[in-house]
Length: 109
Image (cartoon, rainbow, N blue to C red; front, top):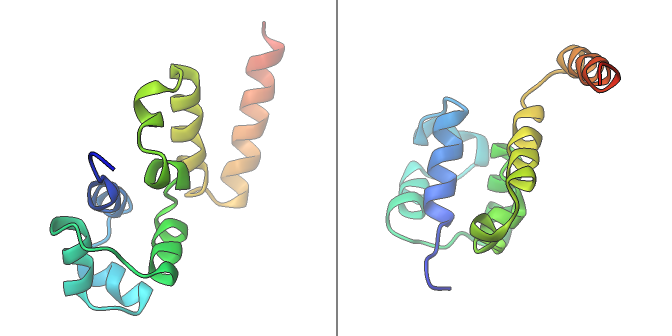
């Protein structure tokens, strides 16, 4: 891959979730040094750690495995991807409110 973005994506998602490297390492049962290596030194996590990083930080897998799509997908697809990642941070109550708002917006057309 011409430009490996895993470290950038992990760091951005971790910061977005308000987690320190130490907190993320504790959640994932690894060392903060391991997280720092992934984020800053292009170190590659093993399969299970990668899986848990993606799930814990709500990173769309396509962002990691098909980074070229970030530059070729439509604006609509990019917005949907961003919304999907944000939706995973919502609780059930928030999701019900958002669903009602989206339905109301669609019916207003």
